[in-house]
Image (cartoon, rainbow, N blue to C red; front, side, top):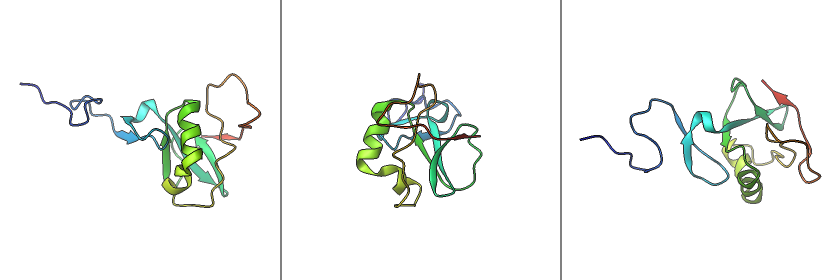
Length: 107
């Protein structure tokens, strides 16, 4: 008998770390999410996942980013309630939109 996953969406046999998206709050493999971190008081996308401090994990989709911004969950996850995450631009987007100007991508 094979072990089953309690959450149902992640294979229990895989050894990849699981993180929770701060936008949609669903669990996913770490490789499916992008890490956000604070640098000089600004929220930046940490592509190499190597910046020091706490990180917030997010699906690289505009819907998840919009939900996270609406609920202010990025600042809470980073334990910095005053952190401004409104200028976060997800990697892989064709170009910046007027609602979400680009920021530096560190890593």
